[in-house]
Length: 390
Image (cartoon, rainbow, N blue to C red; front, side):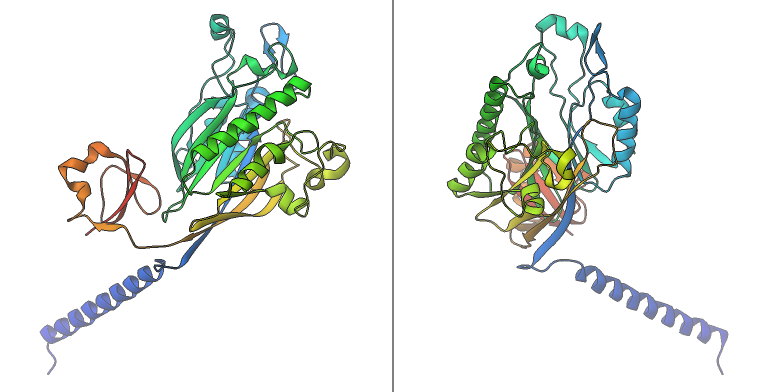
């Protein structure tokens, strides 16, 4: 006869068996999402260099940017960024309305770089120059960045005229982006000299040379994206002769321009020919000064490519239109170099946390301490350790 006690015992055995089966299914499923050693991981992401037109309408009694949209425009741009699916933004002219823009972005949705200030009249009186570059960088969670650095251009032209470039500390910034799964990309964002006087053209030429020298001096085998408001046209500025060709010829990187690749069939406009105006040719055939160039190492397991090139011509809050490029990164997955937390030299006193510059999980989220599973430890010397904690 089946007793209540037997029924309870049978039910318990069935429940335990079900839990064991479920745990097994979950384990197999989780293992299936992990890339195997020697296989390639593919990820897509979007980038956008965008001039947010953040100059004030007036500087004292002088009309500086009478057509600018001011604080309300910055709020609209912030909402646009917050609602977008764009992963990396390289902003320029992020001056007086930065807070209005940033306050519209949901807390934690983007990591935002250093804001270096707006156009402040009191500051200007002290050194006859505004101590700001107007640049900023945003990466969408779970992607992240580190190693932010800023460099002033060696040469600019125009103080009270020709674009007023010498009134601010114009230059470029460098960022080290982490996309998770051991995928890392370098970004250079910039805002180049404005206007078209001979001295302006000379200043931009010098800036391309400066950027070229910085990149070849910092060769590390990671793919690179260079984007921003270049104020350049291939018909007027020798971008190929000053930047693209020298890097290609050096042999360590291959450079491509997303617009040339997807809108011009890989054919560069002829230097000295008539400008390719957007109002005549449209936003694909016409040339825009906001550019996205990318560099792939000729020797390495991680490469990127542009999948398309688009311009949001309907977004008219700034005097520039958002240039949006979808990128794909392919990286070879390897399990080499992964240590066990119990035996890792990282835990030795000689290489303790004082030499660690950050701990991250596999999704590139920063941690306060190591957790169970894979931990990515960035060391102060730039090296990376991968540690499994049981």
